[in-house]
Length: 158
Image (spheres, rainbow, N blue to C red):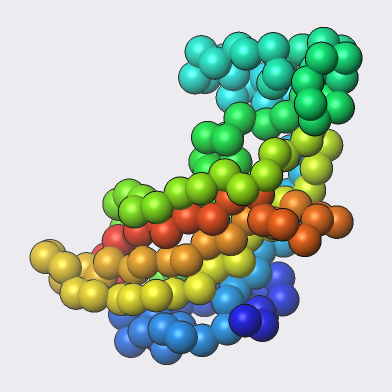
């Protein structure tokens, strides 16, 4: 699958979103995951495992050669990367959930990530909204293997 390079696309109604079904993936800009971001995530989630928050120990003892981001930190970046890729002209949008998530490879602290968003479906839901199922692939710069693949579900009310 090819992809449209990082630029902000704008969608103001369900009809426009439906044009993305089966279209090329939209691609976010790169985002660097630094130690400060990892530490803030550890504080917010109470997950202080040394492989994330102790870079020296992780360099010495982990199989990855350094500290890595939490898998759930990587996953939590998806909504923000989507917002940087698509401008929704809507009354409200919500994250509705996930159907499938896999963490395919580690994210070493200092890595730059981007996401590819391909629309699988757009269906009508109550209160005049639409539900979008996105096939998301999060990539690490310089790596052929994705770090995360997810089926991400959002709802939009225009």
